[in-house]
Image (cartoon, rainbow, N blue to C red; front, side, top):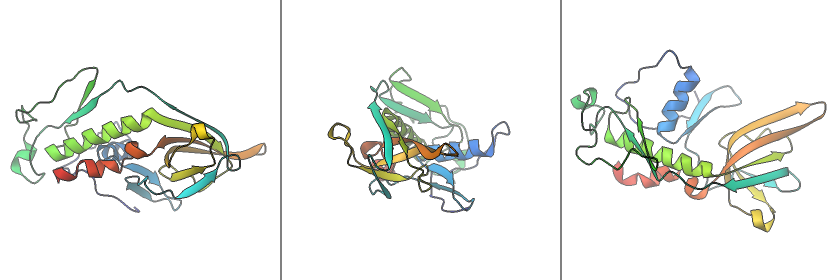
Amino acid sequence: MDRLEDGVSLSYYAADPTRTALDHVGRVCGWSGALARVTPEGKLESFVVNAGQAELALKYGRDVLEFERGETLASIEGFVVAGESGAGSTSAPEALRSTTDFFAGNRPAGPSREQVWRWEPALRTAQAAQRASAALALRYQARRRAGRMKTLLGPALRPGTVVEIQELPEALALGPVWLESVRHRLSRDGAGSDVRFYEAGEADPTALLGSLGGLF
């Protein structure tokens, strides 16, 4: 293991044998708005992307050969994650008991086309469910402002890397982006990297921590 950032607190976790270990890692990280990746040394790490500060700079027309980005309309207004118990702490006895009213009489709107609900029985506290709800919302917003680019072969480009793209045409100018996926190509015909990115700003998963600051 390499760096592992704290996420939601769990009373226990039952590993479904029909899922792979990678499936479980992605599921748990998703509840906290975190990414998981394997380091060049072969170690697993998980972290919340800090998109406020670029780690690398790429120059359009030199490092970046092709670039496109777009924005989709928002059809979903909010996400609600409900657990199986609404305890105040994972160590409380009631965290191990199911409840018929997870929201303690304060049920939010939905489910509907605009308000998406998800049930995660492993989340036993209201705090964990709220954090997972915020993580889903931020991920959705990030996916709305996404793009792709082809670059020169960049071994330093990895999922979660925050990049500044310099000298973009004015109509395409944007702030830092974080890389969602990277595919490196190396053959006798040439080498390069195919990258999918999300814009930072409000779509930055780091905002999850600030948005939930009053809950902890």
